[in-house]
Length: 194
Image (cartoon, one colour):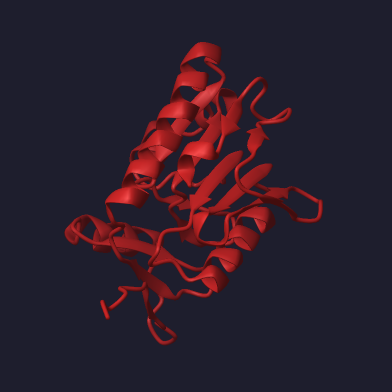
């Protein structure tokens, strides 16, 4: 039976990395993908396989095409680390920020790990993702006032829709999702992500 690679979580209880130290750690180990929780736990994310990588790329393309047509904001890949208001450093699989919010950041802030919570995020569960960890991450996005977030879970044939201040909605796949008022006119058919 093949062994599944999962995220490695390092509890750095006695070591508190500053934002600059965390940035340098990531920069000096660019072949690894790091995230950091608000509690200071360092998460080393495993790479995804071909199917998950292809699905993630398609999600970025779909959102990016909509964004180019509307010119309402900026689209980001999973390589982007955001510093959330609670101090966590998170990398959604896909993220989007309204133009006026991102433009308000200084050039220095945009160059490193932007100190801003996205307006919209997508997390695509890969075979290596622990669902409990993903739920915790989605809650962190809501606590950071992300307006809309989707957790696409091909393994359970579901998508969880998170809206700020509302209960989580679960839909069975395939379905079509709406960007609602956050992403006006954006529609995503999930039939090809199964």
